[in-house]
Figure 1 (cartoon, one colour):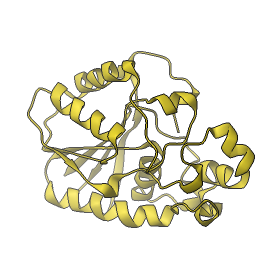
Figure 2: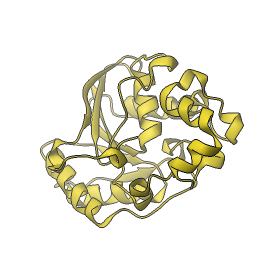
Figure 3: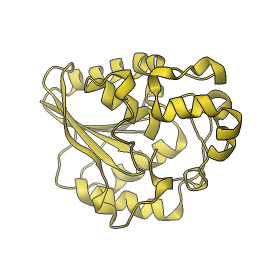
Amino acid sequence: MTRLFFIRHGKTIWNLEGRYQGAKGDSELLPESHTEIKMLANYLKNEKFEKIYCSPIKRAFVTASELARALPQELAVEKNIGLSEFNLGEMEGMLFTDVAKKFPRELDAFRNHPDLYNAKNISGESFQELFSRMTPIIQRICKEHPNGNVIIVSHGAALCAEIRHLLGYSLEDLRKAGGLSNTSTTILKTNDAVNFDCLEWNKTDYLNRKLDQSDTV
């Protein structure tokens, strides 16, 4: 059995500002995020992991690297571009409030109605395109670690969509149960890299604080 520990990167300046980062936008982790990565490591310290895989985007790679240093075992960190955040095209770098004014239909569909989302309207990436690049990577990781635990550090929107896709959710239902928070842990298990079960969803209690709206996408 493979267990996949999906980690959303630490909170950034743009997360706090309510600004879309996407695959090409990026900002620095908040000072407190470095402390929260250590809290995450404390939560994970009793598990044995075989490897850490991560998005190459700086906010995710820094999270993965700091987590690797904070864990009690020595772990390699492997970057894979297929684990990057959604390409959000023209929305990247924009405040949510500004996106709501300029692209109201696209924003509402992306957040609430993925089955109605037309990525071409913003020169972005569709949900199906995301699944096509992420699912084969997750399946390969499972096949390379058939009896182990691995950590995958990626991004809120991409992970929320991909994890629920792996669990068999329809496109229409992808967002109905909420999103993922910064420095959260979601755990799936599988025996065949095809059928997945969720053991934990968006676990953040180890952060010892009340989350606010800017923590979750």
